[in-house]
Image 1 (cartoon, rainbow, N blue to C red):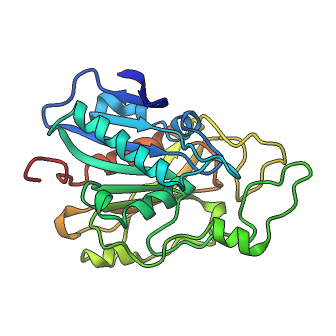
Image 2 (cartoon, one colour):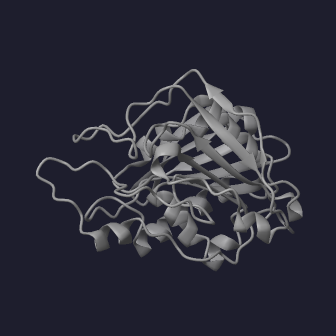
Image 3 (cartoon, rainbow, N blue to C red):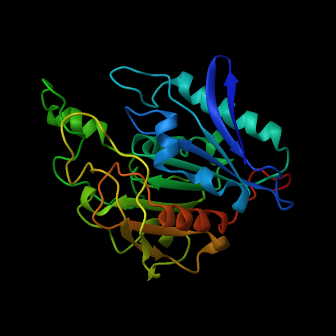
Length: 292
């Protein structure tokens, strides 16, 4: 694996790429952090780069520029920067990207949802991995969801909280594979149906074998205020339930992965990461291929 810092007009991002790209092309993952976070934190929260050589992945992990009231993906400048990151990777692998995925944690997932409703992204993205970043066919958040209050900080007004955690309504018109994962304690429940799967011809989900991890993730939110069940505490081993919706048009992948006894910010466990990557690379691509 080759890891480098790529500078785009003074805005660097981390690029993890294989020593040699596979003959059948690479799977490109744009790995987006959540609000208040940074690219280096996201790289450890979802360490997809661990599988760069094994699966032929190219992973770009950038950092948002907007900082008020906290760092997040909201500005036109950030949107243009993300397009520049994509252009840089495509220039390195002309005609070799067989599949392009957006992966986003929390507000990074909400940003992925927003971007996919624009033509530029809809024409290029083959799949979206939502890492606790909203579901197409919502899994509602538990009451009071949010980061722990910092010393001297007042609770957010209900209307501000609602706006912070609101997601785009309805379904995008774009066509892509979709994988959703979340911690058990951050949502009320995981729906047993998927309107996104129904759109592509499947209504009945299938439960696969649970994923069992005896090793923890690498990172969690260490800000003062103490952990909460919904927001998450220190990482630890765990078990995840995996559901897929088979028989979709175009062999698209739609799946839900529920991490038991986890919250919003515990870094993903190694076998959960491997499971997500396996689902991603098994999905069809082709939007960035010549004549794709």
